[in-house]
Amino acid sequence: MVSIKDVARCAGVAISTVSKVLNDYPNVSEETRERVNRAVEELNFVPNSVAAALSSKQAGRVALLVDINSKTSAIDEINMQHITGALNRAMELNLDVITLFSFMYRNMTVEELIRYLKSQSIAGIIIYGMSKEDKVLHKLVETQEFKCVVVNAPLVNKSTSSVGIDDRKAQYDVARKTIEENNCKRVLYIAGKRNGYVTDERLLGMEQLAKELGLTVLVRNGEFSELLARNITMKYAKNKDVVVCASDLMAIGAMKALIDMDIFRPVCGFDGIVLMGYVGKQMNTVRQNFAEVSRNAMEELHTLLAGGEGRKVVLPHQLVRMKYEDIIC
Image (cartoon, rainbow, N blue to C red; front, top):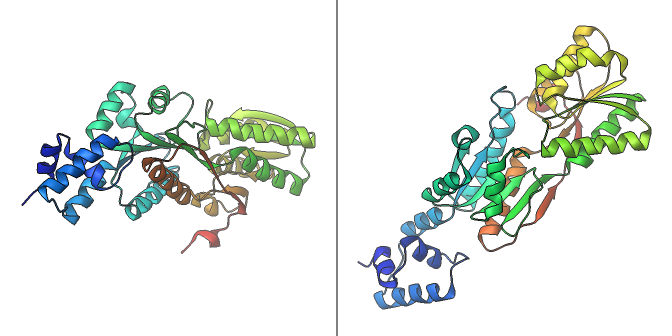
């Protein structure tokens, strides 16, 4: 029986190249396709469906690069939704997936990371939680060695797409709703991580709103930490009318601080995580469907692997007031 190895040997190419030709993958030269097809005809090779499927998966293998926040386990809900959404869509697209957490590649150079990814037969990458300080990941995207999708980071080139919501508009929308409902003028804004893409975009949304409504805004970085947000609220909230937070986790910290201080200030968050339903106080927030965002990212990566060019994909967001009844099942 003729095998795919025999075809590769006859054509003078790697087994993975034969697999790519048989499964009509892009980025294979016409000359190579012709050599492989001639070898298939000469040897009368009939692909085994199971072997072909496995070879196709290997040739189209995808890596998820996930940033883990070691300071808190609460935010893992977002990572789990991202991973679940990506895996479900990958199964539907017949793509093999591996997951790499930030502690696994944090100390690698870009050359080491590229070698490792190639050793794992990676063709495409989805990057989550990327900041401006992630120099190695920036270089990885710039090399265009792999097809890439970055989630919530504005990086686009021929081989790279960006997928996410409009953070600037979403922050503007949820803050405006909260401020106008409560007739506020003095705002404590608790931003996220310094040098973060989403942090900068959400801050721009807040600045636009302040200019339009004539608000005074005190900005402090809460680093997406419940504890830091609590401490900032304890220090500054007495002289403010409202606390706007760039994440739900920080909004929870702010609300708990206000309860302990025995004062009322409206608070709004951002993300729509399940924990918001257990706070006991309803708050406006931006609900992101992280699983659906990740499904879209995997779909976009599949398009890139099939020869598509990088682009910016903006997904919808929703304003909600999360209640306990909304999250129990």
